[in-house]
Image 1 (cartoon, one colour):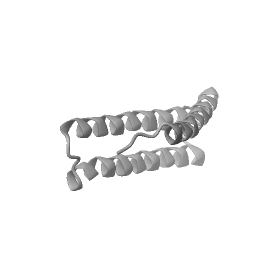
Image 2 (cartoon, helix red, strand yellow; image 1 turned 135 degrees about the horizontal axis):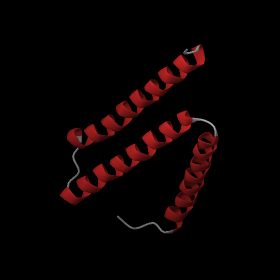
Image 3 (cartoon, rainbow, N blue to C red; image 1 turned 120 degrees about the horizontal axis):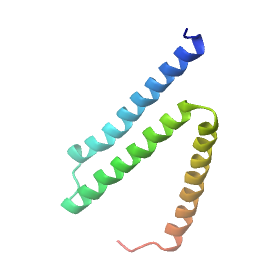
Image 4 (cartoon, rainbow, N blue to C red; image 1 turned 60 degrees about the horizontal axis):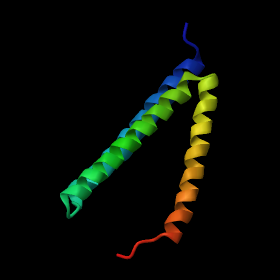
Length: 98
């Protein structure tokens, strides 16, 4: 028998999947509205979006498994946050001229 929490968790999961579709679909459409000048740049941009999609949907799925996997979810988020902050400082100190 499904409880109210099960129904709300399913609706939240569908909502997060829909948000992901909206965000990453919009990112992919930017290539149509403002195309990149080089074919190689376009390929790299689309591969970046694909990698982000994989990470996003993996994390949403892991979160809704629950239990120990929810701790794995939070650990991955903390690692991604730390890596992002480190990359900010790296890119500031190793910038390339345009």
